[in-house]
Structures are given as C-alpha cells and as structure tokens.
Image (cartoon, rainbow, N blue to C red):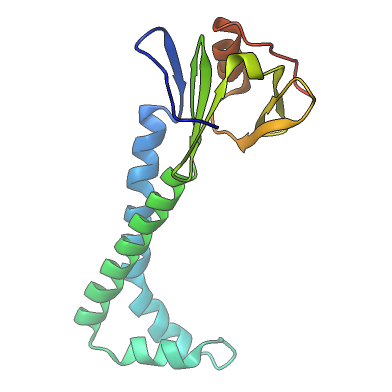
Length: 165
C-alpha cells in the first residue's frame, strides 16, 4: 500500500449514489427523532406490564414530566440516528479506479494498489477482491454498488476482470 497517486486523468469513482447518500443521511436521524418522541408514551405503558424487562429505566423515563421526557428522548433519538449515519458513511467503500492504480477507501483507511501488481479482480459474494500475481489477496472489501458497475469500471481501465466466483 502506498499513498494515492491518481492524477486528473480518466478516473472512475464507485460509491453510494447521491440519492443513496441522501437517504443514509436523512432516514436514521428522522427515525431516531420519531422513535424518541414516542419513547415516553411507550415507557408509561410498559411500566404497567410486570413482565417487561428494564423496569427501572422505564420507570425513570415515565417519572419525568411528559413534556421534558418527549424533548429529551427525541433529541437523544436524533443524536443516535446522526451517529448511526456517521458510522454507515464510514463503512461505505469508495473505489477509485484509474489506468495506473486502484484506491480503496473504507473506515478512514486508504489502500492503494498499482495496476501492475494486480493479477485478478473479481467479486465473491458481496465483496470486491483484488489478487496479486502470486495468488495472494491484496484486498477484500464489502461494496454497496452493483456488480456490473464495478466490473465495467475495472474493465474500462484495462484491469484483469474475472467473472464472479
């Protein structure tokens, strides 16, 4: 692995589409906000059921004045959703393919591979796999794009693409 040296030449980036990124950015915080809003009402109901676990935390939530409980729990839900969004974006693979190299970025880690070091590129299950000339795996990462989009990007730049295994 080395630092990325991709120039401004033809580069193909494969990542979540704008629509997919928008959904990932919006849906978890909104769902967290909505769920948080209803937690005090659910806690009031659940406290009356002796078989429901976590009676202590539920009683605490139910004892808070409803107005404050709704505000606090909705904000906590919003924050939890925002955290989930951040983690989902970090775990999303960004593939940059050029005529000279491949750069894989996931979980704040960047891995670069020269084209001459790659003997085969293929998809196995839901993972992109790069193999060197000795048969060792250079990389194996989960992807979110379509297999056709990934295959087309690698073939467009002249990489040795193998059919799905």
